[in-house]
Image (cartoon, rainbow, N blue to C red; front, side, top):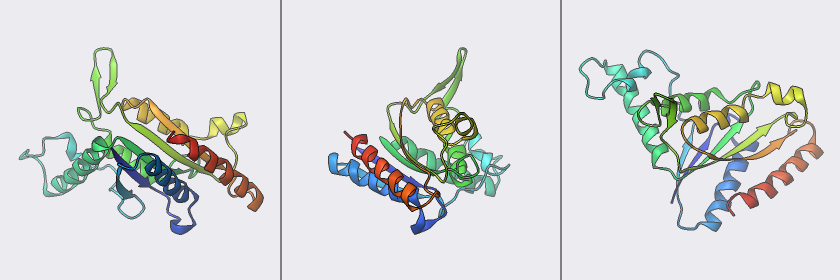
Length: 204
């Protein structure tokens, strides 16, 4: 079994999502000791945002029409989508930034969402090609969004990830959440305790 561990927080050692992904991966390995882990730190190795050059993956890799810049970007996209497709389990650290996900994580998603590789269009609509995987999202939030109508409407983090992974054909998307982590030490401690309990159940 292959596990892809992805972090996207820019807060390094102060990141709650990084701690949650670390604990999630450790818990998974304790229950599935034959698992091999590949690690991707998107805050350190951030793929470029989509541009005319990074859209080169839409053209055949050997195409004479590709510029040198497109070939370089194509190699990045190919490495990322191949790494994603090879994984059986993906653990994603996804803090809430301004009601959505970090732009670094969005850049990764834009690289792996490739027609013909991870999804396709059919006469009846889109079809995901990356099914059979388990995705575990470590979701962190400074405030509280899950218990009121405004918060549920304002967050485009968990809802977006659920949608995009579903679009790629992945139906087993699990969330471990720590919210209110910026609302004082007591609230943060309570959130981390709840998250730890959820992590213990995830790999069961």
